[in-house]
Image (cartoon, rainbow, N blue to C red; front, side, top):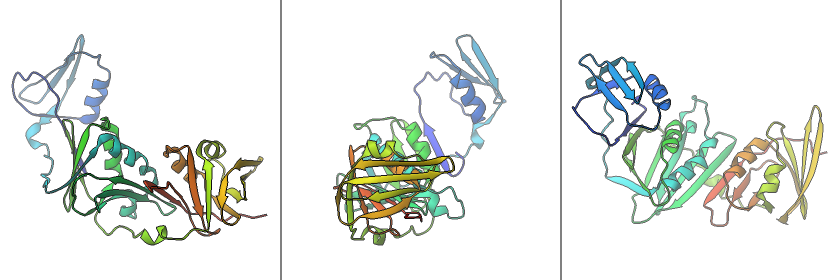
Length: 314
């Protein structure tokens, strides 16, 4: 527990004598990773000195009294939702790349979790793009709107390994959020403040609709060179990348409705979105050279909005 996020997990074992001890986390985890897949014995004396034994390996580590360890905050369980661990891990991984690492705007370092009309939306943004994922919920759920730190969500996605049949209960209060799954609890502080209003950016009537093979588009992009110039014609998308060592021109077949357009983007922003989309083909909507493009499926289970960059259209 570092007062921002706390994790509590239970492991089956044979308890010979009850007790508590606090150990330095890095030393403890570094040693545990080196142990063989075998039974471990942990012993602590009255001074909290701890001996860890596994087969022929022994490790002594100084400890502190467990009584001084900060307990996890108690979280009310009045407001909650239940989804699968697989679904939660997916929505985190498909949005977390869009948070900002700029601590000057704390809201951008977190993700919005909003429950409305029995649907969970998870939103992240960094000033250059917006990522949104939606999940339909079962049962009758209260409306909720909180901002969860990105670091907490990243930690949760790493330790949660259940599948589509393994549930996670998520409890909400004004100050904390609690994730309960398997034998583990994760409590995180929330980020205070009113999250950005993005609905007006998503309600634009786009003039151009382009359908393209995701793998072909992804293979043609290079995040090390920017910006990339996209030329949208009736049947092809032309890509042009210029650098100090030369230029690259490529064409990809597309299905298109609407006008032709030449527009520039930071290719990394497009790559990040395409990598987390499972669909074979993606649909991208455009308006003009100064308006963001939107990548979304017909059911709008995901939406990725990306701001353009200025380019030379010649």
